[in-house]
Length: 220
Ligand code: GRF
Image (tube, rainbow, N blue to C red):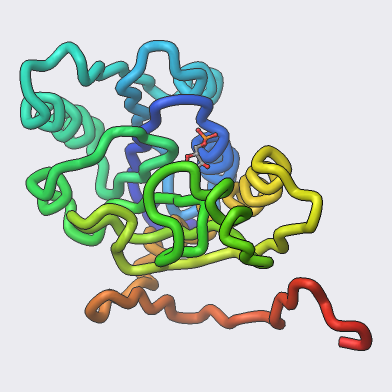
């Protein structure tokens, strides 16, 4: 029997490829969440079209149309609640949310970030990963707290950094994993399988797989 599907609002600012991954997952009636509304702070975000193509209401709430950040966030909050959302997914949403907004959705906002947090918070993280000399990079889905890119980590996916990688190549390799990881992590939250313990998010019924070694030593 298919259980209750949690209603999810997705906040975007641009391309929306992660939104697409969530829409695709939610197209399966057995998926434990449905995308109820997509909100963009930019009218030209391609993700809005993706939402409409999937039959999901798409709304523009332009940050620069508001006199203050608070007023902007109150409008977003109202739109999410009007759509009956219980969970919020940030998917390339390029505005920093205030503690007031975050605290209205305790442990119910997820974000996807293209680095293995806590390494490389902020912007241009794929380029910074290459420049750091790291040989493994990846992406993280975490619970959003008032501190930027610092909330409990739900899931991570790792990829190798190859010797001839440029920013574009590494970004593409990480993005492919983002599209696998985000729907899985949202499903865990929607199913009530996530327990927050301090800054750790513990997911019941999951297990780790083998190690990624990069470069891989011969014979291993
Ligand atoms: C992704 O790399 C995501 O990790 C980051 O912003 C990018 C958004 O891409 N937060 P898209 O709009 O989902 O294609």
